[in-house]
Amino acid sequence: MPLTTPSLAQPTPASFYGLGIAPHILETLTKMKFHTPTPIQQKAIPLAVAGQDVIGVAQTGTGKTLAFGIPMIQRLAQSKGRGLILIPTRELAYQVHQSIHKLDPKLKFAILIGGASMHNQIQELRQHPRILIATPGRLIDHMEQRYVFLNEISILVLDEADRMLDMGFAPQIQKILRVIPKERQTMLFSATMPEAIMKIATSQMKLPVHIEIARSGTVAEKITQEVFVVKKEAKRDLLKKVLVQYHGTILIFSRTKIGAYKITRAIREMGQNAAEIHADRSLAQRREALEGFKSGKYRILVATDIAARGIDVKGIELVLNYDLPDDSENYIHRIGRTGRIGDTGHAISFATPDQGKDLKDIEKLMRMAIPVSEHPEMPLENLIEHKPMKVASFGGRRFGRGGRSRGYIAPAFRKSR
Image (cartoon, rainbow, N blue to C red; front, side):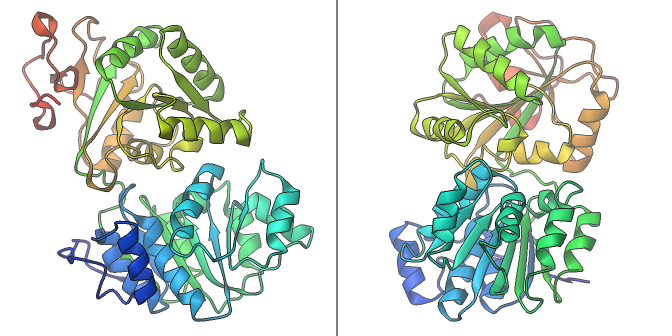
């Protein structure tokens, strides 16, 4: 069983000093303008620097990458081993690389992901990289062709561990674990950690310390939420009204690839600039879309759940769930794309009248209710049976004479943004 630290965060120190971080990394953090560690960094870094196995549970957007990246860089500088970071998506691989590479630009990395050139990856492997960042499938491809050997891995990180160890990835993970030395440091990080996943994870670890900054499924405090009950055929009209109301960057989630394609086309027909990310897009197209979204070329990005854990863009004003996710835990990761590292954020979800159970599962996971809202120009559909007849006005915003609420405005929505 893992050792457990208290779930309540300790007071955050004034700086990264005192966490056991080497002076040269502290200097780099200062240059990167990182002065105050987040709670997960404060608790995880000293343990990981000391070589302990760690299970870290914290909300999305709380700095988990540096929580394992700093100890990995530091420990590899003191030993001969190699680091392996396993991640579920291509986008997350690039995001992790960008964050960690800044800590030591001279350190050699290899990014092994599907959809990218095998030849280029082989060339990177021939440079004897100290850190491998990989999706399981592509790593196994290189293993089977004997381009990479994992006998020197001394530090293993499973980022977004719940996804990595679910039924889809478990066989690949097990295959990789069989060839990695048992004498290694293992770290797992995620925003959600179901009990079944915890059991699988701890069987591969040595007395791991369980750090829980917030209970699994907790949403960042500054993210407000609301849900609109709307017929499927009326979603597009409501989307148009939402896009007029919000003027910042917007991330929209679709349940399917074809849905993402159709939503993007509809948005462009509305005169808005949008890009799409899903599995039918090439790696180059996905990277262009993400970079365009970061740079402001595209105000709106439409994505499937492939992007729920792979997008780290500052200042996303709104996450809009055009479709509710298949898995309630993905809801946590989706809305965690806004309100990152202490910023405020907002999430809107469209739910059809027959999706009461889906909403109830999400609320159960978060241990909180999502206020039901009504747009002044679109009458509220029949309420989902488990939801109370308490309705917040649209996003807490005022629409002049047309705006209305039905007797209840959730505290988070009383002030206009």
